[in-house]
Image (cartoon, rainbow over all chains, first blue to last red):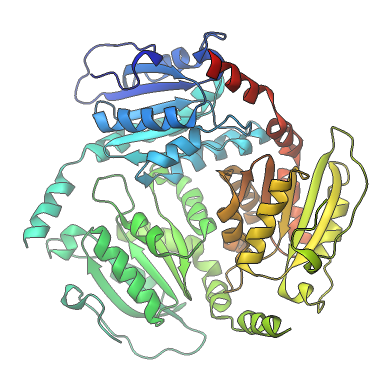
Length: 187
Length: 187
Length: 187
């Protein structure tokens, strides 16, 4: 796998996957963690939480920089090595929170039901869930999902979409539809 | 009524409407049904389901082709013969599913509450409802609503918005507001 | 404070605020009220309802005119005198309802959770809540929230987001994140 944003990343490989496994990438978005001022506890928690769904192929920590986030998400999706990119953090109201904007800039197809379901479930825990600006969408064959910052909130939100992730990835990988389109074009 | 996309359609006329009736068009989006490989059971089920709300003036089956869907939805709305266009299918995660994108390309005003309400209600039946990427919105005086594929899911989702459809159409037809704008411009 | 749209407004000053107070502006959107044909009961009701959250610094009544609404919302946010702009009305299905479109045209960051939460709560009162096309988002340091027309509906919807408004404004005013970005750029 090529390195997209070079030395900015602290990245990790975690071996091969079986065909049924979801290939995840986790992108932690945090100024402080990117500067090494705060340990990133969210990515390890999430890595643990997705163990039964597939493999985390790659992790990285980036600062809350719109252009860097946008270009990294686009490159990761375009490489085609990940089925699901989970972002952590940068979804709130401070001026530096731009993860949703970077996500919206690169997705080709919006998947509003995932973010709605996460917020609806989180609202039962705290009214502050309505301040989450998380988005989700598809670029090529990769699903990008914004999760809130903090290990507990990130895992709680993942748990909401957990029951549908395998089916979602199966549909994203589907080549039969594309083939049908080919036939259709000839017809 | 002029034929917009010509011979692609298999269309049906179902007579005149009274002023209170909602004039529906139903657009089934399916590669297989468009090629005649699979019977379209969803449109007839939906036609039956909207009987007490108004008249289905027109039905068509189109493949999952972004440009064709976009141009057809725009033309149907611009013709002004339909109050509500119900699309069926093409709202999922496979690479061919582009009905929401075609819808977003032609609507002038978003109506997010309809899609949210349908997903919220469907989530009580199955978690897979969060994979619906359905959108809804207004072009000129026509409301376009995406429904999921399959007779049961399509009708279940219609039933969620059924209580508000007549009032929605009444508001869309409202000329008093436009007249007020005219007076306002003179004032 | 400069007058942005001049004599169109009927505006009011309500004194100084303490640092914890939210500085509100209220924009009533109504052709009839703008022409003086109908008393605006919603803004006074809302003014009363936000008393314990902060100060209403400014109120205005404008007709349902897309360009006027868009330019006014942008100017109010850019002036930086208001933490929260509450709009009332113009969120429905009639051809003149364009408050959400004017809002979407000026916000830089979408806050979908606020509108979703308001609709979800309103749906428990009436199915017609799903016809609300209300949007919410951030421009610079100002949060813009669309509320439905009518005193009762406006206050009911405000009450849904009331528990999070102070925290939202605190985050919007946050300069620490911006400073961190500055340090980060130097690092």
